[in-house]
Amino acid sequence: MIHKPKLLILLGAGATIPWGGKTTADLSDIVLKTDGYYTKLKSSGKPWGYHFRQLLADYYQVDKTAISFEDVLEVIEELWSYFYHRGLNNPKWIRPSMPSLFEIARHIDENIGFDRNQLNARKGDSEDVLKCVYFGNLYYDILGNIIFEIKKYEDNFIKYEFRNLREKFADFVQKLNENFSLRCYSLNYDNMLALIPGLPTFYDGTINDSGQFSYEKIIQDDAINCFYHLHGSIHYNTSPNPGIGEYTMINSGQVDFNPAIPRPRHLLGYPILPSIIITGKNKLAKTLMKPFNAFNYSFRRDCVDSCAIITIGYSYRDAHINNCIYSAIKGNSSKKVIHVTKVEPKNLNQQGNELSRALATISDIILEQTIDDGWYVDSKYPIKTYIHGLEEFIKPNGYKYLIETIRKQ
Image 1 (cartoon, helix red, strand yellow):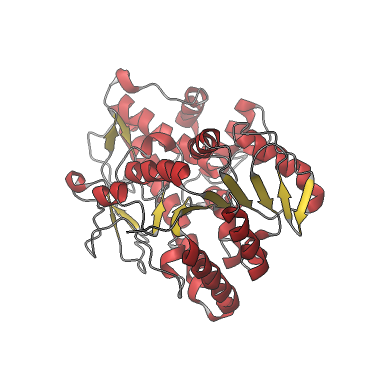
Image 2: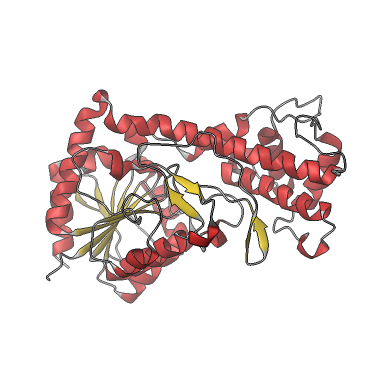
């Protein structure tokens, strides 16, 4: 059988913005405003998210706007683990990865506020056990709020007012599919390519309608259209039976807004809080869990085997993703990388510097030459950047140039 050449498409947060998607700043705001968990500080009186952000900013001597939602979630996970082991009198694992944690943990004793009855405390539960439960509950409440907000914009994929955008996007994907096998990966938590009408069929990694993932098919079948979530999905669920895998898939149109708090799992001997989205503490280590290990293996292979790589709305801030792209380019200097973003022309130098730094200096990206309206090229490597965003990119003049560019290599 003759297979079409593979085209790798990586979707970042910017790919969902035209549909009302959430930016990193939006998600950070959700984390900060999750209520029900307040400090005792009279000067604060705000939820813990605000307090953690300020503590981190003070400790690392940075502006508080530099602290993201993932940083705050990491602190919460660290505190959960710290009190979990301290309550078990298990000094072997009381070794947090964040240097600031010990200072924050000392601060917690004076400022945490909780009700033993509200936490369903048993008679013999120590203060450390209660703190562990407290921060575990806070963590999952935050995730629940994030899931709710993502589901709200996910509904826009099928709403009437987004019809024109939806039809243009479907035409764009169908045109690409005429020429290439589409290997699609998402760093977002929505189910974009499964919900938008008029798209080709994408394999999601599961076995029929069972919700269980087929690791063999994910790894072995590399010629089909696929859509894999590298960092989880709001349509995943933690499996009640880890023997069949750590996660299962919920029906593409369903979301569990109030997932039960799962029991702690151990990864490389270290306890983690399993969640349907991969973020915060031990983010890279969590990708070793099924099915993410298979997804990431497939992504790394497709970076090498694909005829080109398209990144849409990706900030280039995940080192493990950047490394895959970096290795693919170093191994094949003719491989093209097309980056779709939205940036004002006056900020091109700033955008270029960010890309070159985040790409682990694949090249010193100098956006110095205009190829066509909105297209810029790196002078050293075959990296092309389109700066007018996804809505303009999916118009015929945008993807026509894209297909011609890929075919020239």
